[in-house]
Length: 427
Ligand SMILES: C[S@@+](CC[C@H](N)C(=O)[O-])C[C@H]1O[C@@H](n2cnc3c(N)ncnc32)[C@H](O)[C@@H]1O
Image (tube, rainbow, N blue to C red; front, top):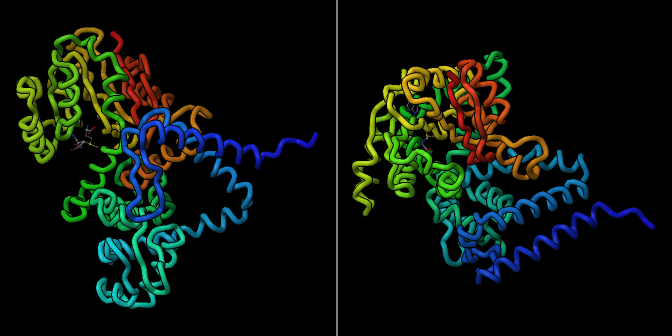
């Protein structure tokens, strides 16, 4: 018998998983997506459901492997390592507002588009034609361009547009300086050693403080990212919050308090103190509280200005919670942050945890390469932007021990983008 073909096995995998995707969409009365500008959009509740995500991951994994094998390493490398020319086309199209200027209905002649965006006709057409190979715009007849589903997303969704703009502008430029920044700062111990700082001469936070328009675009992009995650329900279900009874949770670096407000709604006996060093973030909290019909929130969620590089001032908490902050700092600075909890944990009753809610990178071979790629991409994004990192469970355990040998990771409740690391100070 001939040996089983790897290529056919992958193709069969793609077929069977796609079959299940189609079945899921039909069962949930969801129209299939297509490439047209008015394509049905898959309901986010389906898209982010666990079973649908698993199917999507499996198809991505198998389809990618099939292409890698069929194309071979040389073709893969030649195509992938020239992606920056494609990103150059995206950069020009975003910066010159192609997405907004191509009409939502019908098509536009390239000369007319060139005139309205302020670019010459030759380069406008060349950028469009490269993008069209990825189904971003399409040439409906010679020299006439129209939207597709992907170009329309960039035209109509401000969060998608802001994320793309920020990536193709400051992040793309910063990423291209990665090896130069490492050579210039071989120890890489400080958040100032980032490729972003090397490229722009300013720490990322200072850069955005000086460039309010880019800061607003960055904030809008981040708002989009948090909406895409199914993170809140995972956070609710990923930890036994009821165990704190009517206790007080301190949400360190809690920003506007949107996470505390969500948890306070889910667990009506808990109260929350949201700490942040930014008065702007804290100011965003009051309207969120005012919007809620649950009037008890106004007494159960309070705000306090606090810099987490200074000792924790609340000494009667049931738990300390720090979410999406630790991954913004390199190890040395995280160690300083963790040490600031020690006096408060020493004063609190034994059994008061410090809960870090951040990405926990998966152990080897526990996720598809497709999922691992997304998480690892974010890890390198942290390196480029603020010389920070995403950590594995092992790295979290080492980090807390370096902060204080009495720190003990008791449990990692979940991993991936919704990791919950439960830490105690042994006494
Ligand atoms: C990525 S946001 C996370 C916000 C919130 N925890 C969440 O999960 O949505 C990081 C937060 O850390 C705050 N932050 C940055 N440096 C800080 C510091 N030194 N002390 C306290 N908060 C700080 C920022 O203002 C921001 O609100």
